[in-house]
Image (cartoon, rainbow, N blue to C red; front, side, top):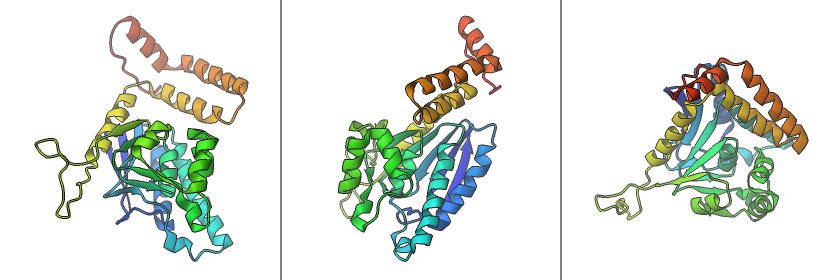
Length: 275
């Protein structure tokens, strides 16, 4: 259900649980375990998360959840939160390449990533209230931090589903790309039922382009920037500034800082080694 491919220091995580890539306990455990070797991979520069088929992740497994007791639900949400926390805390940037539906747990999975690039086919939402529950994999916390508490409350209270354009407008998504196959005239190809044919390649290509761009920067600096932003969100401004100053200063003990500044003065491309 989880496939990981590596290329040029980039790990691409594919969620593959057809037909809609729902997050069941088995898949969450598989993803949690798959992240362990990525944490220790010194050659890793970035991670991309995407879905196979029509959906990024269409939500959690409602059939599985419908039979849960309080204790079952607690264990399930601990597994979900723990897995997404582990993804969020990877020392390298994580990019969500969102193709198709990203509902409930799918939006929460995307929110655990550093950057979200969406296909025009993408749909986002936290529709849990329609089932008599609330987001449990971090949606009430990360969504409010991402788009502000007012807009987060609107989406969570109403359970509304929004398209990629709206997600971009409110800051949930950082980049939009084409999501349908085109014919020679630039028109959308249709299947035998007259429906546009989804194309997942553009969003994955855009994510890979961004990942490779990031991979060319100083890896220690990227890691420190991620720490400063993520941890700073839970601090006061002045505590955050102190953290930033510490992380900034410690980079001057690295070879990457020497290489980066020397390369700039010598008008050449730096060769960072993550040291």
